[in-house]
Image 1: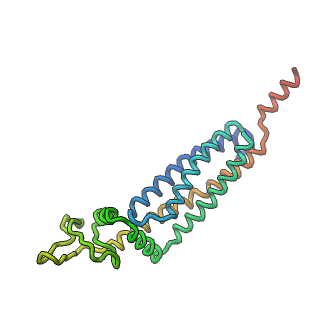
Image 2: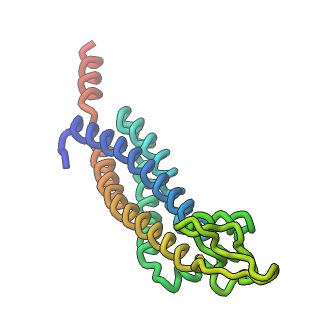
Image 3: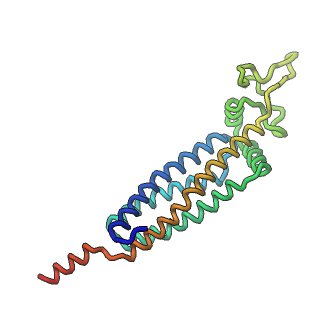
Length: 221
C-alpha cells in the first residue's frame, strides 16, 4: 500500500475505475443467470445485481472524492463501500452454499408462479416438457427436442404421447450454474472492496501537500 499522498490518490482512483468494471461484470453475469434460469429467478441473484448497481454509483463517488480529497465524500464512500462488502460477501456465500435440494425447491416454486408463456419459453429453450409433479396435464405438442423431432405426438386423436424429458433437471442445472458463477465472482471481488476501504481510510487522513504550499504562499503575502 502506498504511503505518499499522490500514490494513495492515484491508487484510489485506479481502484474505483476497476470497481466500475467489476460492477458491470456483476450486473451482466447476474442478469444472464436470471435469464438462463428463466422461471427460477432468485432473490439472491437480484441482490447481487443491486450490489453491482450500488458499487457502480459509489465508485463514481470514490473517483470524485479522491480527485478532490473531499473529506465528507470519502467518509460516506468508506461507510457505503464497507456495507456493500458485507452484503455482497454474505449473498455470494449463500449462492455458493445452495445445495441441490434447495435448487429443486427454488426451481419448482418458480415454475408454479411462472405464466404459461414463460413456461412455454422454458420448454422451448431446454427442449423439455412440463415440470415433474407440476402441470402434468399440459401438452407440449409444439415443442421440439434437440434432434428436431416433436416432443409430444397426438395418438388416436385424444391421447398425447411424450418422449422429451421433464424440465426439472435442466432448470436445476441452469440455476445451479448461475448461482455458482454469480457467487464465485461476487465472493472474489468482494475482497477488493476491503482493500479500497483501507486505502480510502489512509488517504482521508493524509494532508494535501498542495494545500500546505498554498498556505505558505498566502502567509508570505
